[in-house]
Length: 256
Ligand SMILES: [Zn+2]
Image (cartoon, rainbow, N blue to C red; front, side, top):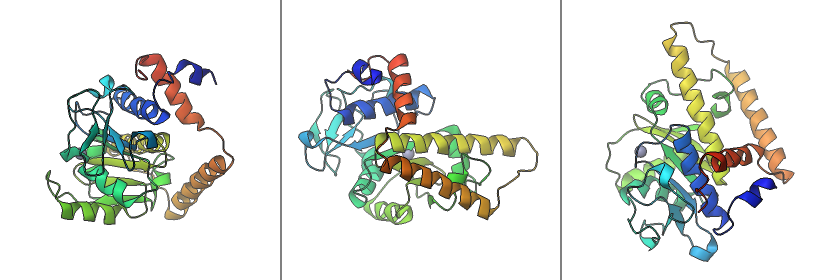
């Protein structure tokens, strides 16, 4: 694969792919200065039950494969190549999910205008199109409890997420989980675009042509079936690979 030859192999794949996710979230204008996080399981060589996260104070477009910090499940630092520490409070949602869901390799959280806007609507996400239908009956909601995240709220976040892979944090933002960084990223792109489209429709003053429950469910199952077949066949994630090529083109130093 041409891409693999061009991307540095000086760092483990986990670091390279997580750094790419940070750069791509910035590339698509979905970052919130130095806030929100994307966390991923660290390679075994960097610790048992260890996680990678962005160094505190860096913009997403400054994150590289080599400057990601390694932390344990409590957010305590195991390795900090950049030396700026991490935002431990910001890791609390992530740590709760990583602890409760060993199937999840990556947790991606955003505060975007579209995501926060839909998170601020009582209706939540509506099944209006092919971006939103895959989330039909598959999107969790967690009620806002203020900024402080205590241990009790962590338990409620985990309970609200259940076995789902995407969640609207009401009045706050969006969250996706994946068995890989690419899976979490692609889900976030779809959820973000679903939110943008919903706002566009609701702002148009035209009547939303909402999908029936049956059609939304049918579409969601089609998406799931395609994804599972693709994975079972051992095929590379073509869309994520395409995003990685974009990342290398626009952010040539991300894998350093
Ligand atoms: Zn947040």
